[in-house]
Image (cartoon, rainbow, N blue to C red; front, side, top):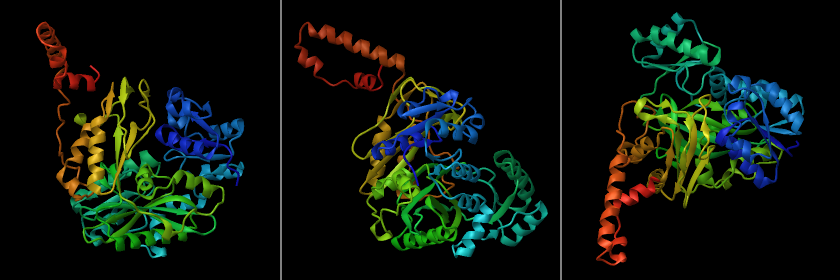
Length: 497
């Protein structure tokens, strides 16, 4: 299958991530961008770039015909969809195939099989993969309530075509069921155009653990260990790590083999993630399968030393997987924090705008996957992610401490951000102990730390310090004055005052 020029049908940090691997492989890249992204970093880094319409994604990044047109104009013979947008769109995958363009992702029928959570549950059950007790098919309101009473409360309502926490409601008792179902249906309809909802038994304080899998066109399947994604806010992942502090070697093997049962059942090809819920007794249950590269793939790359985007391209070319299951390494521990343009002090409201100052952390075993630069705009039209900051250490505690230090170096000016929130989480007792579950952030656990003295007092103190130094210089050697460290000046220099 030809892969000689790749169009990246995405934006931001994931587009840049793909461009970097393509450069290493000697493959030219084509970027697409909306009018709001004209000055974006991925546009500057690609070999070619084409505008595909207005800022709204539904008029640009989600318009399949425009992507196909750019493929024709640029001569791109392959498309990498990243995540989001067209990455799990079976119609898009079919259209690329029909046009003779290699889709760097799974077959359209795999996307269809796993795209519906109820259909995916049926596949998992048939494959012998454990699932959460519940009702697979969607039902009318009265039938769902009756089924929930049989399963036993608490139950979880889920949108059949859902993802990202949309259309999900935890219902503790029957009296709350009708109103919760109405809200779940309404959110499902607005997010996915389908108000179908099904019900599952709610697992108390579950852990969200996922298995990264890879499959090729020759029938080979491997799992690249697990990631723990239990630190969530409103069902959205906040911090990911690999491996999981909850998983034993025996559990890892059992989860990996269960994930591969699902992959084999649908004749999967490419990168995929099988997600599970696990309880305190290490029982695990199939949740869903994401038929794409995950946002949090860097932590898997840290512990395996592998380039997952390169693997995607090799598999799309029809090559065999580079390693067998026994050859997949597992080395150390990795942490990832999602840095967003949002204000934790105002219920995490998005904070779009221009980045007036940016200093990103670096150093040994620190990685910052970013799609911005100093002077760039964070548009209001898309996900407000600034970067994915990840660290590696030989142990979990060392990875946490390296992350804490890296967050302390991070400086972003002009917009609000959630770095202080992540810093507090790195020091949060239950997190450091690995006592994680998906509801651990439901209750506030932090208060913003003061980042330093008030600006006017800092400037006044610095001026006074210099005035006193001038007076001393008349009677003392300069070294005796200038050689003395001053915390106020250090704080001012570090924050570029």
